[in-house]
Length: 318
Picture 1 (cartoon, one colour):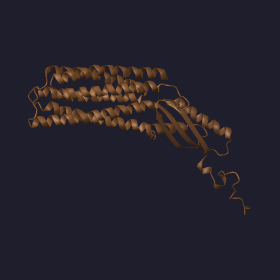
Picture 2: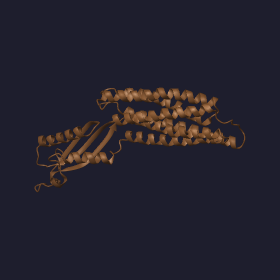
Picture 3: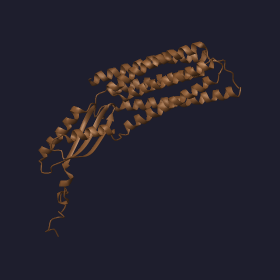
Picture 4: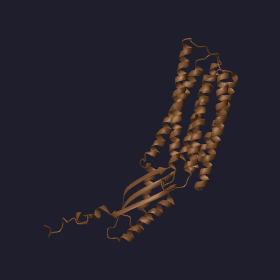
């Protein structure tokens, strides 16, 4: 799949999620208020938050597809990680607001300060419709995110999955409140908020890790090391560093080779290493290979001296 094709699939997934959440936000908010269901209203507020962050994600992902320029030689793909960070921030803020309001509602009901009539039947049907929509969106966006490697789309997919748990909790609270246990509806809203908060923290952790250029995952590091070692005349793999720009990888490798090789021969080894990595690792955008004599071949007398610096191993040195 070409980068342009991946961008189109990513944008389609985000646009579909945005349109669906617009409809769900309107339905759940209106019915949550009119149907006397704090749990459905809380989930409606969650969908309103989803609409807000999806607009930001849509803008950022459009910008991430811009080609490299002088100020951004590796392109703009890290905007996808930034958009995922925006997703996490919106999700966490929404969870805190919903939880605080739900706990306040439960307390007021228990002390008799407010009255709650129980949720209307239409609230339950809206919850069922939301569950079916979120199941479909979770499946579709997860598949697209796995195909394209987009951290932003995968964050959206996780939020859809999060919404499945939240609407199940809301629907359970609505159903039980209709049997007379009216305090379970706002309590369900509080449980919804905790599930939302957990997902938001996970999204923030993963997206910030991408921006912090952490070391590659162990399976990826092992794969890079294996490929480099398979190249002829590579004696050692001394260091591997990799970080992401959006869904793409940048890799820096330091290898040890025979110190008696010429510079041209060493450059040929480095070129073969680069070719091996590009041909076998998907989403690899840039490779830098550094080479020098293997550690066992080094000797203090072989260390490079600065111009004009005396040779400390010269027996005639005074």
